Image (tube, rainbow, N blue to C red; front, side, top):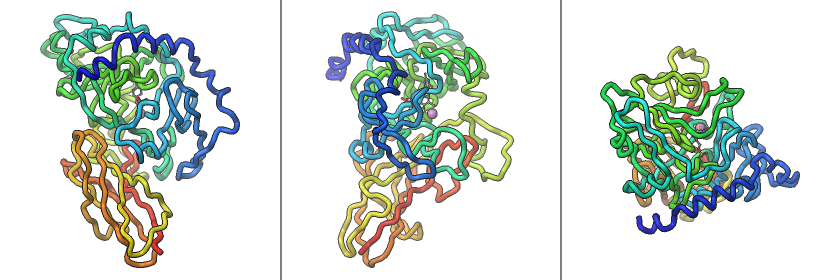
Length: 415
Ligand SMILES: Nc1nc2c(c(=O)[nH]1)N[C@H]1C(S)=C(S)[C@@H](COP(=O)(O)O)O[C@H]1N2
Ligand SMILES: [Mo]
C-alpha cells in the first residue's frame, strides 16, 4: 500500500493533464496510415484495423472498432500473456464523442448530494489521502462483449472477446464516502454521473448516468477508484476517478465520476430506461423468435472461460501430452470449477485452477490432454460459478446482443 501511495502522487496527475491538453483525440485519423495492419476477427465482416501505439493517448496497439467516439478492443494476445490487462492495452468504450481529454485535478471534485444530511465535495487529493485505500481485482467487461458472435446478428459494436479486461482497482468504498455525507431515511437509489455532457444522437442534455440501489452501492465493494494496476487511470478509462462495481457489467462503471446523487426513487434516465436492457428471464436470454414484453436493465455478469495459447485448427501430435490452458471468471461470484471436454461436450473433466486473486478476477486454468487417435477433436471449455450457474452450450441471444457467454469450442487436428 505504501508503495502504491508513492507511485501515485499528485504530481503525476498534474503532469498527465498537461500532456493531454496537447493531444487532439480526433486528429488521429491522419495517423492511421493506409498501411495500418488489419486483423480478421473470426466472424462475418470481421476485418478491423489495428491502430499503432500512441494513436490514442496513453494507449498501445489496439483493434479499432470505432473512431468517434472511441471503441478500442484488446487483442487476444494480451490475454494470453497477462492475467492483469496492462492499462495501455485495456479496451475503451465511450458512448458520446465529447468527453474531456483534460481534467484539472486541482478543481476536480466528487459532489455527494440529494437525500443526505451533509452534502459534501471531495477533491482528488482528499480521496487519495484522507481515506484508507482498498484494493480489489475485478474484471471490467462491456455487456456487449463478444457481440460479433451473436447469431442472428444484432446491431451494435461487433466486438470479438476483447471488450473486457482484468485489473487491480484501488479506491475508496462508496459506503465510506456516503457515511460522511449521512444518508437520510427514505433514500433508495444512487445516481452516478460523469464529467461529459450529452450530445446527439442521444436526447439533448442526456448526461451519462447509471443508477444502483442503495443496498448495492453500500455493499462495501462498490468503490470510487483512482488507480488501475497501481497507476492512475488512463484518461480513456475514466481519469481521474471511476466507479467500480465488481461482478456487474461495465456499463455501471461510470468513468470520470463527478456526481453522486442519493435519491428516493429509481430515476428514469435514458441510460437506465432505454439502453442496456435485457429480457426479464432467468438467464437474460430469449429465443430469437420470441417476443418478450418485459425488459430490465442489464446487471450481474455471468461466468465465462476461454482458451489461450491454442487456436482453432491447431495441430497436435498423437500420444503426445499437451497442456491446454486458458482463463476464466465466475461473473458476479467466484469460480467453482472449469470443465474441459475433448469430445464436443459428451464428457467433461475438471481443469486445474491457478492462483485465486479474488472472486471477481480472471483465473488461469489448465489441463493435460493426450490425443490417442489421428483425427479431429472438438475441445470445449465451460466455467461454473459458485452460484452453480454455468455457460450454455449455444443459444445466448437477446435483442441487444448482451451477456454472450456460450461455451467456447475449437477443433484441433491430431496426427
Ligand atoms: N462516463 C462514462 N462512463 C462510462 C461509459 C461512458 O460512455 N461514459 N460507458 C460505460 C460502458 S457501457 C463501458 S463498457 C465502460 C467501458 O470502460 P473502459 O472504456 O474503461 O474499458 O465504461 C462505462 N462507463
Ligand atoms: Mo458497455
